[in-house]
Amino acid sequence: MKNHFSFVGSDKGSWRVTSNRTLRGDGLAPVQRIEVINSPAAEVIEGGSWVLQGFTSNIRYAIRDELTRLKAVQEGLNRPAARSAALIPIRKNAEWWAMTQEERRAVFEEKSHHTAIGLKFLPAIARQLHHARDLGEPFDFLTWFEFAPEHTALFDQLLAQLRATREWQYVDREVDIRLARDA
Image 1 (tube, rainbow, N blue to C red):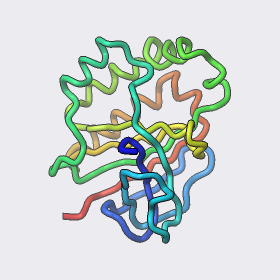
Image 2: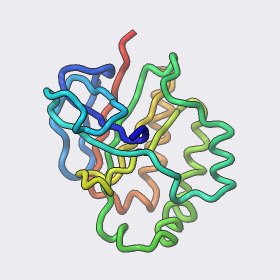
Image 3: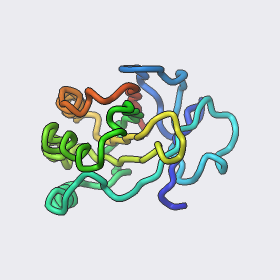
Image 4: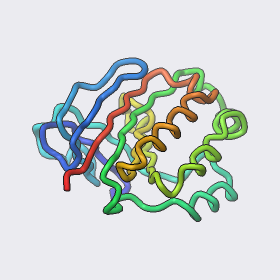
């Protein structure tokens, strides 16, 4: 599957871990490096401390106008200048999943303004959401961000604004792993 990704934490990988902070719930074992592989974990070589899997999919809580605005300014991943990254696995609580999709959309956008917040930080910060819940993973979402090192403070502002929203009241597990790509 082209849209299935594995994030392998070990002592090998393209991305060097610069910090691993647990914000809520259980953390992840510390690792030195992370490799992002575009294949299921069953196809990943052995030797990793942990593997998180997710898949890219349609954007589930955005309306057409929001998608159009995002696509107009979002830049892709793997840009040469984007030598910093963050992997932020998130799990939301049972209350979140008990809501209908329309109710979750209301919290996500109408009350938390998730897309509007994200738009303020584009194109400096590229992002990709990976869905993990349907795979039975320990997190619901694996959020991947890439940015140039000089945009680290901007990225921290983005996270602070998102974490201050009503949506984050439903997060019961979150780990913030910061990474750097060697030259």
